[in-house]
Length: 314
Length: 99
Image 1 (cartoon, rainbow over the protein chains, first blue to last red):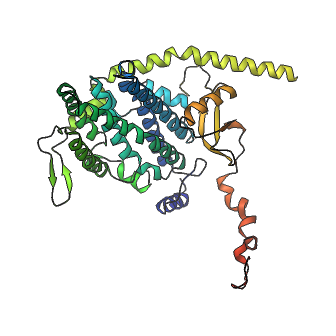
Image 2: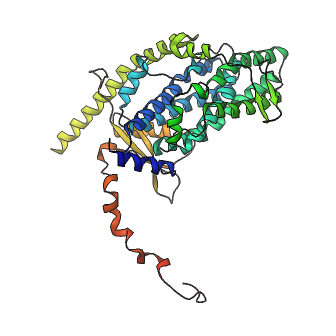
Image 3: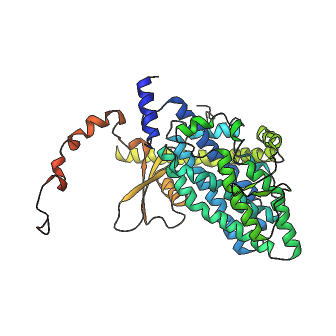
């Protein structure tokens, strides 16, 4: 590696300069982004499953339309992100294979089940709320195509979080059974949601480099705190209780402090031992395999049409 | 490339959207499709779910010829050195209107 090039790159990025696909970049920067953007894309694609589970059983036509639109958005977000990753030289097929073979990771939150309708809306409120907290700073990421994709994603996800909160509110203000359902969903999704920001800062070895490269703007713990402060107030507005006996407001800092996060559980789910890891992957592989004939037929048709038009032109 | 040998990857298309009549098409991103027709329909579904456009272009990515970032300096130099092409280059009295 040319040290002069590296120096110029580092100072360009440090001065808030943006990086575009054909620009020279250190291989580590490229690989870090490929890993992060493709994992992000995989998360969107796998993330369709827990909510997709409730489309056919949504409690009203209105909720069904909303949920359909939301899940469709997740597919779209996955595609924006795959296309951003491809600008770094990785092919779509390689990324698909990495996901299908289990080599690539996706956000471990999607390995939890949606047991009731309340879980489907709790995802919108908490998981999308956490995702937005994470994604807003990514709109200023040094890599142009990723930042631009994030701008689109954030614009669209504002609706995801709001519909989730509205859905939670309908339950929380409903009958006692409905309120209990909402509380149950909060109990199940609270800890996985705050673990979503990743391991604590002192256990996050790649963060420093990502911060220096302006890929990451805030540390995992900073983002987590931002989300907790927001979610605690929102839970109060819903009249629901955060399932954490140690939760308290730190008067000095003005931030809400939680009890200890169970990182053993987090790592177990990352490593494949969550309640739905196998189900999510089995479903993804099945969808991929069952779509193979469609992809092949479309390509065969396109090739044939092209041959025909070439013949006609000859 | 570790993909199934039998499966040929769909070509990549760049997507451009005209947000409303009167403005240019602007690059929005890219997508894979078997042919241009499918690219257009997929672009509609992926990039214009919220009335973002009234017209779409899809262009095979392979058909784009791009200037190279390494030659950026030399390539754009002719316009950089000609500051007299900008109105601010000229000294004119402040009290003369419509200049």
